[in-house]
Image (cartoon, rainbow, N blue to C red; front, side, top):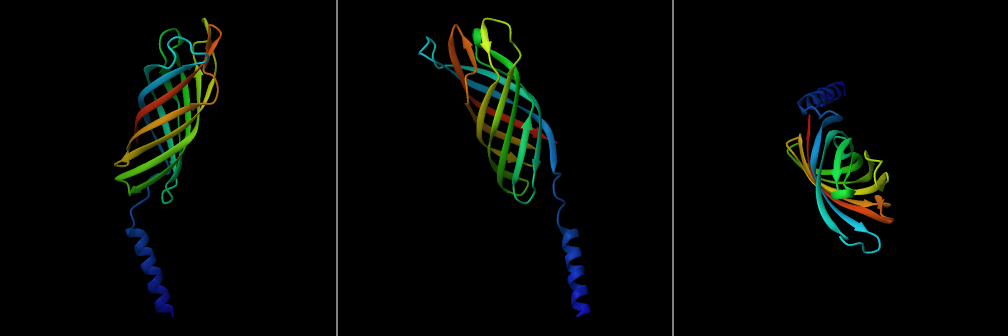
Length: 181
């Protein structure tokens, strides 16, 4: 019995030594991309649903449970969206719950969902700007441990701003790339 138990312990120890080390739990990186925004004016204002492009960039952190594939990512992004008088420039804070299905560390597909907060830097002009809260839904791929490419859609949960007594919502598609160290 002692020989069987000893052999079992040695086999388990060798197995743990032979397994590759798991990736670190927290990864830091940089995220950037393009905002494609559709401004939806209440009441059919001329220019209703005009499209515009902007950008975002900033630091990002991701926490992942290695075997399960479940994780959380968050970022603090400098973001610009909209155009003309109603251009929004500010800080965006998306926080997403992610589930990744993959082939080890080489390739993975992820699904993400979570809240998104936008704080506009410009407060004093003829546009009544609001803190915008939205819901992110997204998919993407993780390549070679460090690179992520994804697409998100932000559903606004309220109005983004008010201009000339007309309220509007920003509905935004985001195409992003992130590099994690």
